[in-house]
Structures are given as structure tokens and as C-alpha cells.
Amino acid sequence: MPWIQTYSAQVLSLLLLFVIAAMPSSVAFGQDKESNSVKVFILAGQSNMEGKAPNALFEHQATDAKTKSLFTHLRDENGWVTRDDVWIKYLGRHGGLTLGYGTRDRTGLELEFGTVLGNHFEEPVLLIKTCWGGHSLFRNFRPPSAGMPADETLQEEWERAKTNKQKQNEKRNRNDALPTMDEITTVYGSSYRNMLQEVKEVQKNYETLFPELKGKQLEISGFVWFQGWNDQYGGAEQEYETNMKHLINDIRKDLGVKKMPVVIGLMGQNGSKPAKGPMLAIQQAQMAMMSVNDFQGNVVSIRTDELVDKAAEELYPEWKERFEEWKLVGGDRPYHYLGSAIWFNRIGNKMAKSMIELME
Picture 1 (cartoon, rainbow, N blue to C red):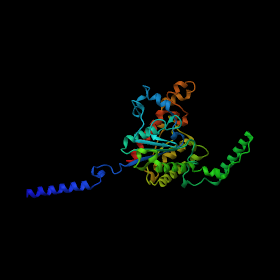
Picture 2: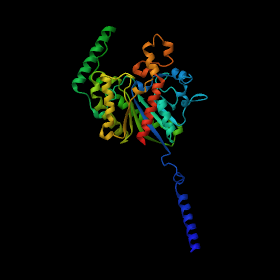
Picture 3: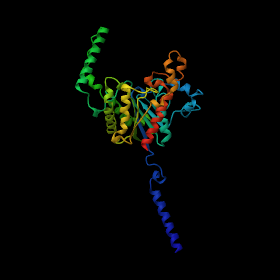
């Protein structure tokens, strides 16, 4: 009967309202249950992950008519934007992401990387940079499961270290103690351990470092690796592929994120020229990570040579003779991607988009 149907509909409506009222507000209004989380990304490697593009170059190219469009999204009417939704911790420095979180008076890929992620995620983003110049995967970043090198390798390194120290003593007329084997072996894996320590310290103290994040939960969301130069020597490139596998497996295990997305930036200092020798071997080892069964779909390797800043590359051979022109396009040697702000930004952009694709 019509009145019964009307009465039933009213009862159902009241029941539905009661259920909604009893639900937590975040669920009742359809909010993401993870909205209280912070997406955390670890940026690890050596000097190029530190960042080598001069801030002065960024300042020039951001206002030069020929290049300013490449930097507009990083600035407002007051200059460089300091993000209030993307945070960064780089050794002794921390704060909202902006220009200058590279080595002294320089910037790296973190600026564009964090900007792209911040624009993409509703949750806050936190970048933890754990990088030190001149550190190899074979030695400093050596992951635990890789074990120590062969005794013969360690013995040879020890003998070289003692010989070098003896020469220094003779040159300076000193009698300093010679290196011990313990001093040699302690270096292996030291950067890996320091990387983990940096992450753990941020996890412990983030509410003090970043008061704006107080009450939120950190969520380890991705790992970015940009390294390779120091593995070109002494045959270390031959072991790079196995060490890289160990690195990915170990960092996931130690951080407790089984399938943590990993983005690897291939060595790309060759730019427009084809890579060869140890550099090519390392590139191939880095690219091979995408073919490992357990890494398919959660690890991606991107080419950085294809992102080269050709204006800087073309001028570099004459940088001494045309120094004033050079300062307007570059700021460092080829092993530091010419110190090109454009090149570092392109790498950061590609890495961020690749990370987002893996996460989705």
C-alpha cells in the first residue's frame, strides 16, 4: 500500500542518517583515511644527488627571456617559492622546499622532484637527502647482504693505504701511525649505515624539525638513487649490478617496505655522446634492475643523458675563453652535469613522474 511504502522509506532514511552520524567524520564525508599521512621519499647517492647547479645560475635563467618559462612554476611575484606542503631534510639543514638545498650556494634535482610530487599529492611530502660526494656503491654505500670484498682485495687496499701514508710522512717529515686493517674495513658500508641513521633520526624527531607535521604519520613511499661515478675505478663497475640488487633488497628490508618504489637515475654525464667503458657498464647494470623478477613494476631506471642541456654542452669546451657567457648556462665540470640548472631540473622532473607512475 502507498502509505506503507512511504513509511518504510522514512524509516530507512532515518536509519541511514543514524549510521552516518555514528561514523568517524573522515569516513562520513568521504575523506581519504590516509589524509593524516606524510609521503616520505629518500634521495640517496653521491655528489650529483647533493646538487651542483649554482643558485646564481638559477637566478639568471629564471629571469632571462630565453629560459624564464622553464622556471616560472618555481617562483611567484616575490621570487622563489618556499613550499608549505613539501619539506626537506638534508644533513644539517631542514625546512620548506626551496632553492638552495644542494651543496653550498647550489641546488640539485630535489627542487623539481619535490615540486612535482607536491603538486600531485594531497598529503604533505617530505624529502630526506642522504648523499655524500665521492662515495661508491662498491665501498661506502656497500649494502650488508653484499658482504665484504675478498680478503685479497682488502689486503691490496691496505697495502696501498700504508704506502701512501709512508710517502706523506716522508714528504712532511712526520711519523704518523700507518692505517690499520680495521680502518680499511670500517669504511665499507659506512654511508649505507649513515643513510639509515639519517632516516631513523628524522622519523624520531620530525615533529620538532617540522612543527607543521606534528600529529601526522610518516609513510616511507619511495627511494631515489643517483650515483655511479666513483664505481668506474678499480674494476668496481663489474660488481655494480649485484651490489645494486643487494642495495634495493636491503633498503626495503631495513625500512620495512617490501615493495617500496625505486627510481634509479642512470649515469648520464656522457650527454649527447655515447657512453663507453666503465660508464657504459654501470649504465647497463643500472638498467638491468628493471629485468629482475622481484623488481618488475616497482623499480624503474631512467636515462639522464637524454635530458642533457645542449646549450651548456656546446659551450663547455670553450668555457675558459668565454667564461662570462659560460656562467649564464653552466657552472661545473661534466661529471657534475655541467652544473646546469636546466639539466638538474629535467632529471628531477623525470624522476618524480616516474615515481608517481610506480606508485599508481
